[in-house]
Image 1 (cartoon, helix red, strand yellow):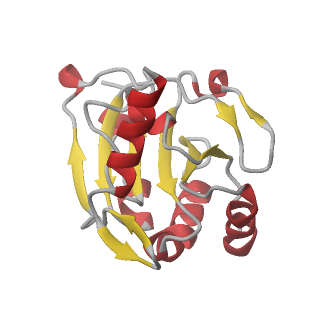
Image 2 (cartoon, rainbow, N blue to C red):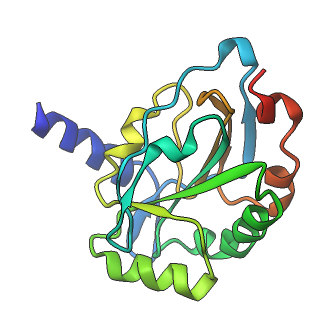
Image 3 (tube, rainbow, N blue to C red):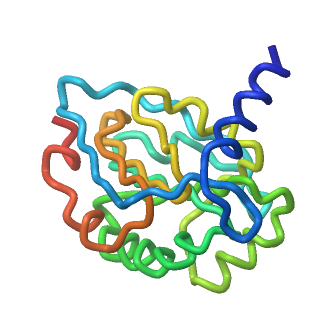
Length: 180
């Protein structure tokens, strides 16, 4: 079973995209998808080790809107959106909690350098194999970068496939913020 999961991770993350800096990934177009409240499904628990070696406690997310950004230090569009995401995290402080998921960096050092270089202050889980991402089945983050928004009830409410800017995140509507 572990081999099957590992094979799926490799196929999903490496096999279906264009090459960027020698690493295949699926690039997105920035499209924004929202899920009507009645159709939202619970997101998988995000737990594990952060890129700086700490432990991430998913209970800190309970009852809050959560913005999950999937990124890699090697990803040019991720570098482009990093400042906007940090600005959105600052502007929505108290309204939303930001969590990154670093993927495909086989060593955490480049991910740590990325966070320092772009002033990213929110935690990022270290997920080199993409195992955490496999739990998002209904609205998967199928490009790098991707951003998911969970409503206050922990359900996937929106997804941005590809790089984003501050505006869609800061403009979270009340349905997402309140979990309706």
